[in-house]
Length: 439
Image (tube, rainbow, N blue to C red; front, side, top):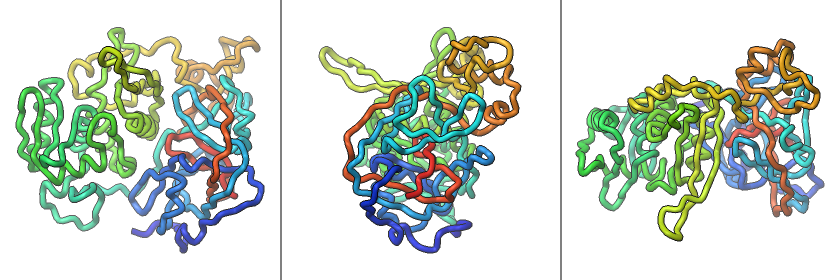
């Protein structure tokens, strides 16, 4: 399918190695979202040079504070001897770039400024996170085949090989992410039952798409070799290797909200209703879900801890926690008890993640002390801020994150730079926006 303003040559034609002194460069391990026609994919920088089709990347336009898809014009790999810095934010996002690579940020007066990575100030500097995925020509069907799930035009319906990207299908895939596993050698997959209502809903959806599920000792078993293999390849096989494929970012909103509902129905809300969170053993899934929720303007925490599951044995566990302002944007959960808690949820008075891009001492009314250098919560600042530049920032689709640490790292042999429209910045997969990636 043609895409407007596509480059006429492939990325391979533009990719090159440059030895000149460089000021801007991104680690090859960093991932980025690219759009190829209607398909959105997650790809590492070091793999992007091997693309043989033109793509578009998610970019930020400082003139109107918007995110859009822009053609990737050039991609360069640089031999590098310069130090890098690893930037970690309050929400748990991380990125590694050259120490001199600039980031768009905002000053106290509400003006966008560029700050080099080594000059970012922990606890003070703000970074931009896209709070939306621009509209794309969403496709409505997926084809279940071997070995992956993917979109297809002119589809002839032949269930269960072709499935409509509905809310119910999103819910089913979310349930698989949270409590499912695939056993390819048996041509089957399983979803653990955690609640009678969810059990009936999951069985009903599976029957509607043409499978024949059955319940066995609290576990739903589905014998479908094609669907099992597709789920395994796109979403992972067991808890530790689960992930969210890039194509879901371009799926219809109804499907995405269903997937969030299915996944979060396995989460829990603290007894006082102050925290809405879910846990997983897959780092990739936790990062994917953080990016996925950011695409509907929901800010999250991502934390990890060592979970001891037996004497002397432990494993990494990752917790995703919703910010105060994000709870109201979440889908209504299908799990009845969690839905009841969701409706009774009361925002805490202080949420360190709910960042607004305005220092508290500049907000009209309260907290005017010059010694107060923190950032107010979105609810407070939205109510109190009156300056036009501040209002413009608050009304934009941007999520804001505070730099937590800046750590110097040794040089990497190669770093990468991208060229798009020179006035735009590029958003990495985990959301952190980088200034001027042109070489």
